[in-house]
Amino acid sequence: MRGHLGTRIAQIIPTLILVSVLVFCLQQLMPGDPALVMAGEERGDPQVLAQIRAELWLDRSLPVQYLHWIGNVLQGNLGYSWRIRQPVAQLVAEKLPVTLQLGAMAFVIAVLIGVPTGIIAAVQRNKFWDYLANAIGLAGLSTPTFWLGIMLILLISVDLGWLPPSGYVPLTEDWRQSLATTIMPAFVLGNAIAAILMRHTRSAMLTSLDQDYVRTARAKGLREFVVVIRHALRNALIPVVTLGALELGTLFSGAVLTEQVFSIPGFGKMIVDAVFNRDYPVVQGVVLVTAFLYVMLNLLADVLYVVINPRLRGA
Image 1: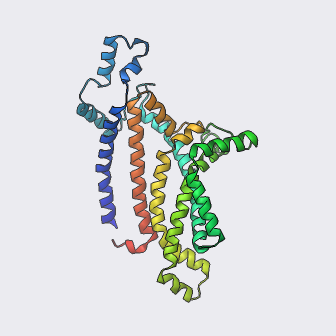
Image 2: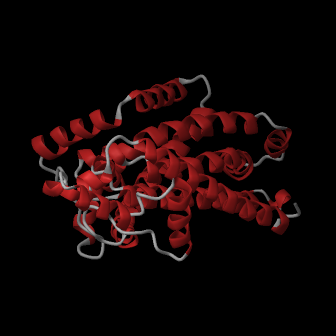
Image 3: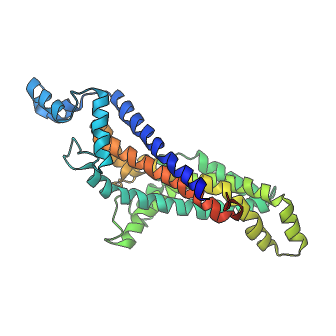
């Protein structure tokens, strides 16, 4: 187990280096000149533009710019926002908890809906509940996130007045209001993930239910609930855990549209504003932090494999 985890941890460093190179190089393809954006009304003055480019290292070659940036990152300095003149690390510290809360709530909703529904669909194979679960899953996968968000705002907030239509309140300020402002966007985010988890849980459970150890458990006279949960589900969870870790990373990195629709000041909204304003340091910092979270979630999935399947502990 330690050797396997050590190998996985060793793979994180080259992965993050590759991500940093890709992020730095690809964003250079973005149209426009950041110096012109920052110069504002003085964009017609060549001296002002030259001074801005020198301060931001834009007058150096790309390899020099990259080494300067990655050297600061290794020291914990993600740079300064070119637009609002604040440290990127500070902006990340302000926005990251918002997206983490939203993503965590969405993932919990997805698991609570997707996994039990997948189990029921597998146990009731080719019956009414199986067909119903598959129909709901297909609807969840086919529904656009932004459309579902708008419809929920119109129905629940405008027509019924049950929840606020937009905004965000931190948990530390008022946890009830915080849940009220995030439950709808969390459901919108978790809807498609729940459908994916349902389909994979159903597939994995069908495979487990056909195994010999399940037939043996039934032959021993164990209750069907014990057979399904203790024997079939435990082995079926391994591919589901893999998918869950990947989808959790997707939630953290793919909440752009949902945060825009519900006006939530998280990572998604921040990176959209940064792209439109050519604020390269913010884009780089957000993508790098997101990539790090994604890699760590995959490492967490490897640990959970061993917890779920004891046979892997000797590996």
